[in-house]
Image 1 (cartoon, one colour):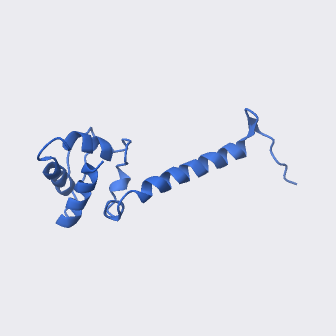
Image 2 (tube, rainbow, N blue to C red):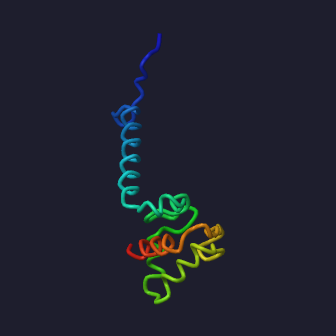
Image 3 (cartoon, rainbow, N blue to C red):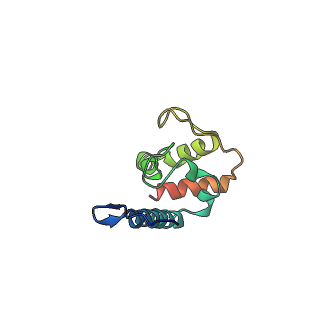
Length: 115
């Protein structure tokens, strides 16, 4: 016969806490994912980048903050997406994406700079 665990933390059952965090994480991901255009999601950008936190690569907000003031910022981002980078944002290099169409690269960099 299985016994129900009465484990609690600060008067709240751990299963309740677990459910809260699962729902919070799902909701946070859903809200963020909905605001990311398909061209970004479909080209694996979300593997290394997020809206406002550094993962393996810088956040899109950090990229925007760095390049928005630069007249050539969009061109720099386009070149980084197409050719990859190394050493710009830390030790992890960004791989080149030569398979992307020019209009997709333009759409991605435009979206980043709108942050």
